[in-house]
Length: 139
Image 1 (tube, rainbow, N blue to C red):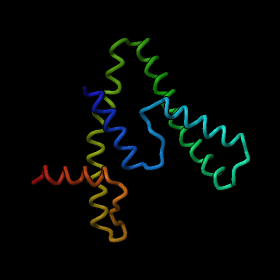
Image 2: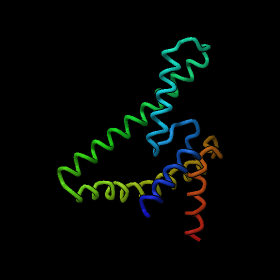
Image 3: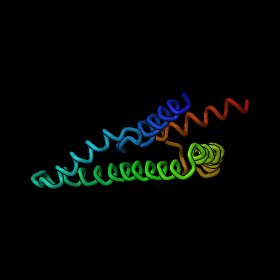
């Protein structure tokens, strides 16, 4: 269930904070999107604006797919080498990421209060929600 929750959070993060970026949780969608963009670029009969957009989407989707392949390969190598102890690596990364995320949110909040030009935006909704959760905990 922790894995399901982590996948849901990952999907929500991409949808809320990274609009226009490819999903980082569904390999099939990324593979289809990459193929569509590649076909658009190879076809070459589209308007220049569409070609530029297709190239941007191709680069983003390719990076997501490459990250998935690199992560899967690393996972396989760790599993072959260390068995179930390979699960300790992502758990250790999560244990570092959680306090680091809290530090970043607090640092951003301090920066926004000290500098008038650093105005918060509604675009980064996950950070806003996380800040609200932290402010409730401190009350």
